Length: 185
Image 1 (cartoon, one colour):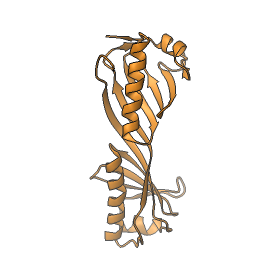
Image 2: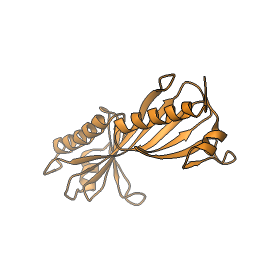
Image 3: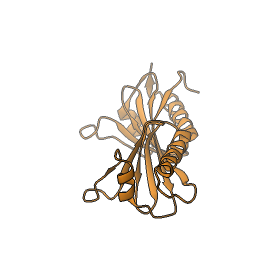
Image 4: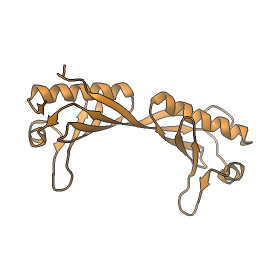
């Protein structure tokens, strides 16, 4: 186990939803003036909700992409809230949307500094080009995630589809960095 506890904060959960029906985006923008739709620039409509504070892209195919939530549960709630608001605003939605988390982004503070050159040398699938980017890009496979590792001891973890995978991947990396003597407290 690591000497210090990692501070992990879920920053964004990206989830997709599918209504399994086509949707009239012009009708949505007519019924919801706050919705943003400019089909000449982008084929999706932006539908924002205040609670939970998220943005959902809605496409005419009935597919949706929700961003801005801070948990898997909040992402599912946000998509269901959008559907509920659409129905309340006169948009016919037949069934319930399927919801699937696609990506979770977390920020992490390991509580110490990290030797980036040694991380790049010792860890497999690590890439470090300090002239181009100030951190190590590290891909791990179990659980599958990608880390941006900075000398400050701060990380960004992305690519996981479950919050639990973030916590497991961070703990494994923190333990490995300590075991290799790559952390300074």
